[in-house]
Image (cartoon, rainbow over all chains, first blue to last red; front, side):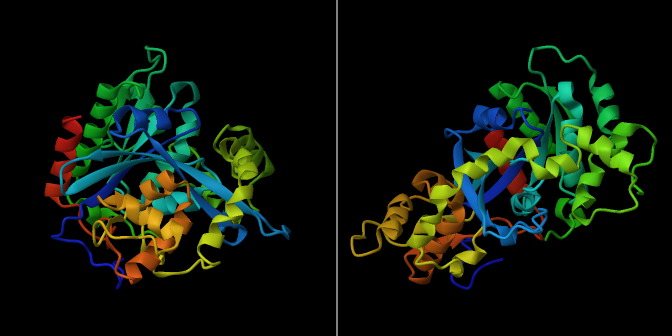
Length: 202
Length: 170
């Protein structure tokens, strides 16, 4: 991973960056949650790719070289002088899975935001993190105050492993988003040997 | 098609088929595919246009230009950079005026440690291009970089604790 041209920075003044992903279906509150806890106004960057890199896309028969962009929302939390946490909202599912691979690489863990109005929209995210053995929590985003389901009902519907925390929250609320992130990090710390169980990416 | 989740209720199948969609299984009955397609985010229809993301394609026009900044190069020492690699200018208060404007722009933002993603956002240049430009600067010794925690490494407890404390302090 380390480039011959860049020192690894260990023991230097350069902080170590870690990241947490915020995933979920369209409209589940990903960008809202990143914004509610970020110390900076959430930034938006673009990664762009050419047809050739869109490996999973069904582009058979497409003759032109096409370019498309993937917008990424992200925020930052400076933990201390040595550690900076970045929060990335994941881009749309489907043909952007390749982008998820890069995003997921080295991630401490992920928050999957579930929208009880459209619970199934979080299933692909849950599948992704399970398959990559990336620790995650499921946060049920209460948009209008009340959640019509209990945590147990949601857990059953999503069918996640017993040890995966499922919590209620409100992505718009900073304290609530903090609790969701804390639940994730505590979950990661409880894992016997977090990275050992993690499958190789790529 | 076999799934690892066969507890019987529909939701356990979740979006599993989505993952195998690129290598579509001809043995999947048509009605199963149809059911997928009817699911807002769980099926082949999503592959074609996830979350209406096709709309972003229309924004891709001006993006041809940024590669002009890199002299057409798409490969450089920047290839090893991650989106959260942290970079910092190797020297402060230099006169960057002799450099290419894009290189100078990056160095001006690198006075304090900053991530590749933040540089991309602040300069409004796609990350791919920022990485190429940073690769030049690293090669020239103008910028130092620290890679993020590699996947293979154990997230050390002290790092996790620092993250935990940092979130609590928010």
